[in-house]
Amino acid sequence: GSFSSQDEQKRVVDPIVLCTCAQESLSIVMSITNKCLLPDPSGRPSIEDVLWNLQYAAQVQATADGDQRSEDASSI
Image 1 (tube, rainbow, N blue to C red):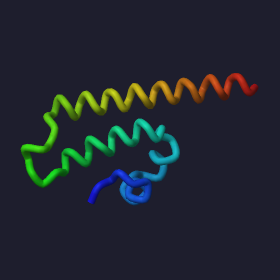
Image 2: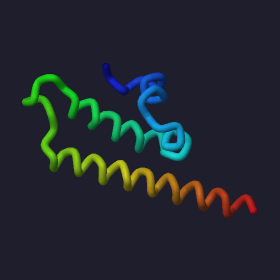
Image 3: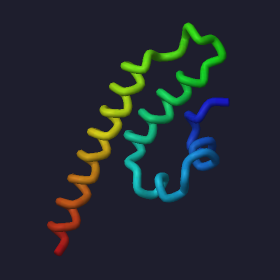
Image 4: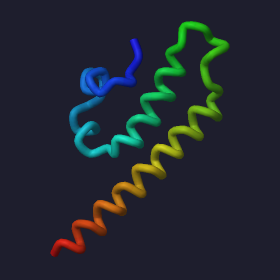
């Protein structure tokens, strides 16, 4: 099955990750994971593509974390 739905994400993703990870970042990781699991090897991404997507997801997460910290600081 695919991990694109939020129900599927809840089923396969660690609950701590679900509550600490930005949805956009998680969606990027789940999307590349789906591609890695394709039955036809020719449809699967290269390791470079996987790495690029994981780095992009990490940047999205870092931006989300930074935004969250600045919101927390402004509410003090």
